[in-house]
Length: 75
Image (cartoon, rainbow, N blue to C red; front, side):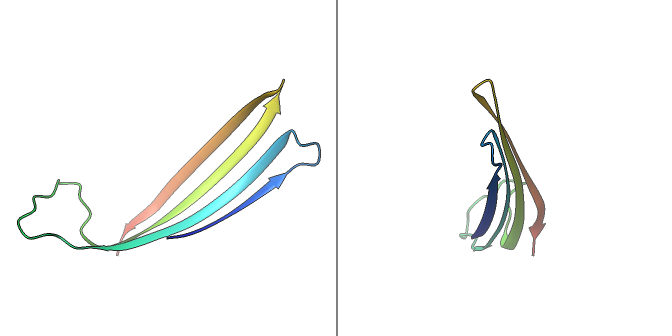
């Protein structure tokens, strides 16, 4: 797993924004005789993950938006 993130806090400290990126990869080994679900991922796989976060403080109540996007799962 590799992950990198950057966060910027605005000078008045009432808002911030962040951007994240991650990469996951693995080799799945199937155990003989194990029954897999139809949606199981087998073999080598990799996933790129992107994230955007924002925080805005309005009337002393923080509000956050977190969004993740998995763009590809496959070799």
